[in-house]
Length: 405
Length: 212
Image (cartoon, rainbow over all chains, first blue to last red; front, side):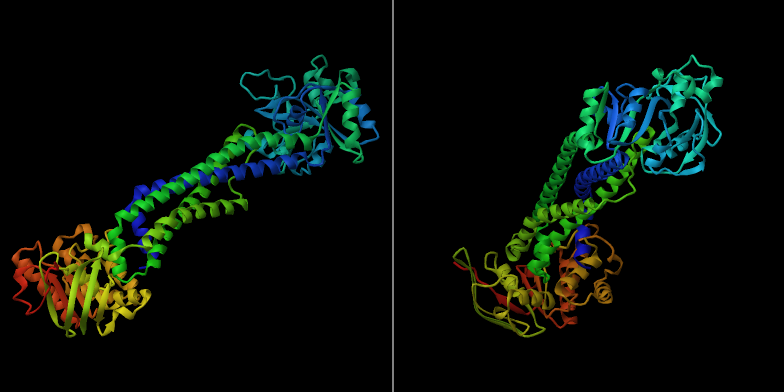
C-alpha cells in the first residue's frame, strides 16, 4: 500500500474518464511525435540527396521544379537541354564536374534514370550483386525497386512511357532492359530508381534506329538530336556560385537552380503546414490538460469523504497533495508513453504508404531527441493540471466534512 | 487515560460544546449521551484529534493534544486513535484488505498483512479480504470499519452512533463487537449515542446538555 496503489485504484475506478484523458493526451503527443519523426527524416534525406550538388541545370522553367524532378525524382522535368549546350557547359572553367540525367520512362512507378557512372560514385552507392551497366539497356536497380518488383540479376523488363506508373501507359516493348546489378541500400534517392546509361533513354525514344544498333546508338545519333533532361553540376571554385547561375540564365536556353536555396524554400513552404499541425497538436495537449484538471477537480468533491477519512487515519495534508499530483503525473505518463508509441506506429504506417506510392519513405523505428521534450511537455501539463486540485485536497477540512456526512 | 478540562468550542462565535471536566481510565468503556445539538459529534471530533477546540485542555492516552504540532498530531491520531464513523466511509476504490493496509500506511506504521488477517478473522471477515465495500452488506461494512479502527491497536476507540438504524439483535451484536475489540487492544472505548437500548449495557455515562 502506497500512494501509487491508491492513485491507481482511483484511476481504475473511473476507467472511462481515465481512458478519455489518456487518449486525448496521447493523440496530441502522437501528432507531435509524427511531425518530429517525419520532418527530421525528410530533412535529413533531402539534404543527403542534394549534398555535393552545387547547381542543377535544366530547361527554362521553375527552379523548384528542376530540383524536385532531377535531384529528388518527385516532380516532372521542365523539358530537355541540348547535348551541345551541355558539352559547352562542361568545358566552362568554373565547372568541375557535370553529371547528365535523362528521364522519361518508369518501371512500375520507379523512374528509369539515364546517367553515367559518376552518379553512382557521387551517392557512394555500392553494388550488392552484379556489376554496373556497360552498354545501353543494361540496368542496375535500387534496393526498393528490387524489393517491390522482385527483379533479379538477368531479369528483363520494359520501360513504360512517362514518370507516373499509371495503368495503361505506352510500353516500350521493342527495348527490354536487362538487370545486371543490384545496389545495396544507400538511404538516398538511388534506392528508389532504376539506373542505366543515358544512351538507353535515347535508344528507347528514337524509334527510327534499328534495335540491332542500340549498342552504338551514341555514335549513330546525330548530336543535334541528343538531349539531356538535366545536368547536376559541381563548381570548380566557390566564386562560381556568384557567377555561373547568372551566366547560364542569361547566355543559354537553360535554367539554373540552386539545390540549397530551393530546398530551404521548400522547407519554408512545408514549415507552414507543419506549424499548423503542431499548433493543432498543442491544442490537443492543452485540452487534455484541461480535461485532467476538470477530472481531478470533480474528484475532489466526489472524494471529499475519502480525503477527510484519510486525514483522520493520520495522513498529513502534504500526503493528500502528493496523491492528487501523483494521479495527474500518472495520467500524463500513460498519455505520453501511449502517444509516443502511437506516433512511431503512425510514422511507420505513413512510411509504408509512401513506399507503396514510390515516394521518399520514413521509418517509425528511429528515435529523435526532441521526443524527450514532448514527453516532458506532457508531464508538465499533467503536473500543472493537478496543482490546484492537489492544493485544495491538502486543505481538506476533516471535522467539517465528516460532521456533514 | 483520557481527560478533559475547561473544554470549549465555538463555531461562528457561538459556543457549541462546553465540558468543565471529564476523566476516563485507560481501558474503560463510556457512553457519551445527549440530545442532538448538545455537541456529541463535536466532542467526538475533539477526542479524535481532528478538531482543535477553541479552548481548554485535552489529554488522550496520556498525551496533551494541545502541545502537538500539526504533523505530530496527524501521526498521533493515526497511531493511537481509532474512529468508527456513523456513515462508515470506507474507501470505495480499495478492497477490504487495502482499506486496512491504508490505515497502517497512513499512520506510518509497518504494513503487516498478518495483523490485518488476524483482525479480519476476529471480526468474521476472513473471506471478505478481497471484496470491495460495495459488495458488502451493511453489517459486514460496519465490521470492516471497526477492523480499520482497531488494526493499529489504538489506545482510544471512538464510535459515532454505531447502533442507530439497527434492529435490537444487530444493535447488541455491534455493541458486543466494539467492546470485544476495545478489550483486545486494551483501548478506552467512547461511544457517542442517543440510543436508549444500550444505556444499560455500559454503566459509565457522560451526559452532554444542550447549550442555550
